Length: 318
Image 1 (tube, rainbow, N blue to C red):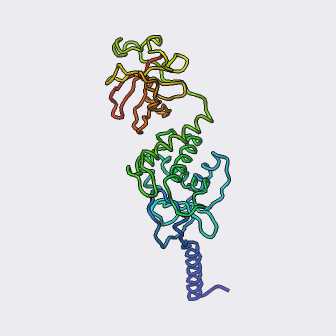
Image 2 (cartoon, one colour):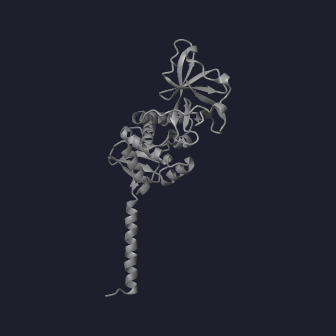
Image 3 (spheres, rainbow, N blue to C red):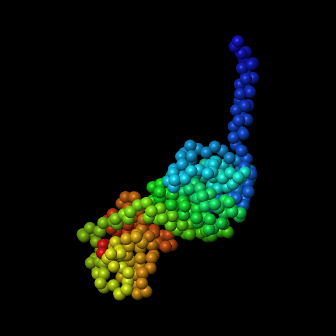
């Protein structure tokens, strides 16, 4: 028997009420224990905090992160009204919480999807390293371990080192806090993880070609013959790929080794002053990162460029 108009209204109202109750029950308020929460930047979580179902793109991201290191998920991922992202435990269950607004902001700021991936990988690193099992919440040593894990994972997933560091470069503060290290230390930790993954999964890539003869700097700045080096200096032809000549200091000796380190040689011996990494970019397929996390680019033409495109020097074979 067909329903009357009034009965239809009653049934519709009951259906809408039931839907509203079901949706509300999915938004669970989380009890917080600050001693078992590690946040991305040290911002404390203040209640009430509610969890929401994660987006499909976030679930896919987490699966890619775990697949890159051959692990199974031992935690749940939830969107939440948190300042950025956090790893936490409640009711003996591990959780990764993230703000969807924050994730979108990171990707807009860094102009790459790798920014958000690095942050989620960082929080996963807290769980995998057991940081959330320890009392006290975030601490500098744990943050560096999570940063290193992030760099390792992103290299495995195909990110360049600059992409792996993009979020940290844009968001971290320069100074250390009681819970988090300074930005330069965190960038270094990501680089260490990135290189550790690279050394374990890929062979050394060839360096850039030499500059074309017609465009090289003056002959006075050409490489020295190896036999002219002071005795005892470990810069023999079998160890290095090329000499680095900077326009500002052409007489100082810098070399790129076959382990992709940049070393400076003087009377005291050899000192590692930087690293070389692929960018997979064109026309600058490599970057040279100094110990204080400043960058210059190595072009296909063999010249070294600043971020603004200024020629700073060149690399020539030995």
